[in-house]
Amino acid sequence: MVGEHIVIILGMGAVTYLLRIFPFLLAPRFHPRIIRWFQFLSYAIIASFVWYGLVKGAPLPVNFGFRSVALVLTVLVAVRSKSALGGMAAGVGAVLILSRLGG
Amino acid sequence: MNRDRLATFREGARAALPVCFGFLGITTALGIAAHAAGLSLGETVLMSAVVFAAPAQFPAIDLLPLAGQTVKILLSTFVINLRFSVLSFTLTPHFRNVRTAVILPAAHLISISTFAVSFLGFQQKSAQDKFLYFLGVAIPSFTCYLLGTAVGYLFGIRIPGGFEEGIQFVFPAYLTAILAAELRERQAIFLVVVTFFTTPIVERVVPGWGLILNAFIVATAAIGVEIWWESTSSLS
Image (tube, rainbow over all chains, first blue to last red):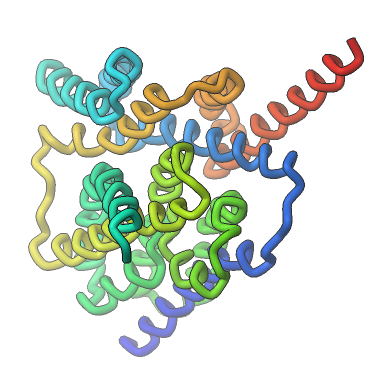
């Protein structure tokens, strides 16, 4: 049973690794327009991920509300201070305080 | 490694700190779930080491103790982790100066978190520094991932309720803050805002695929608008 588990786990690893490496094996030479599209795609994936982080594990609408307020604060502090760490600290601090206050 | 290259690696490692927090939160839960499902410590850590993708690991942990689930586990791993190919494709232009033999082992460390932080850091890096910066982000992140899995399994440590909300918010807050502090290009800012607000709509239509699908749609629309704009400008 344990041996079977190990084989399945290694199989999962092989499947995932192949998915990760095959684009590098193709070693494509992309047209500048495709590279530009990839750049847009990267920003879009990151923005999607921010949205996912906002709703992930938020058990109640009130948690989503806290996080939304904190996200706005994160943007404001990061833009004003031009510091990503400062923005992050403000946002996380806001979530902690609001979730305590909100119960 | 000379001093400049070491500095680039360290810069990446500093940028990885929020990723580590996020990973510790996720993987301690992963370790606890694996323990509860009856997996051994070795199996649990091995899975984190070779898969390095929590969304694929959680369902596998539930299915592994059941008999005859091999095909289902491998298929779900494939489908859930398809997104890694998109991320790798997106990274290929950035690593074009690096030999494929060097990239292949490092490609194992690509996750949405290590990709996002690296990509945003790439904007201020020369072509030579990008790969080192990626390693600086990815190696400590991977280490935290393994550490969190083992700690969760061995000690069953849960993050106290009051802090869980904060820990979960560290990584999205960090990405948002980098975008807000660093992003200057008008088209990219517009694209980020549009994606953010359209993702929940697409996710509702195609649950589980909305994040990637919407990113594809918005990026393609953006490049279409850019081509149209350029052709219109050149005509006038």
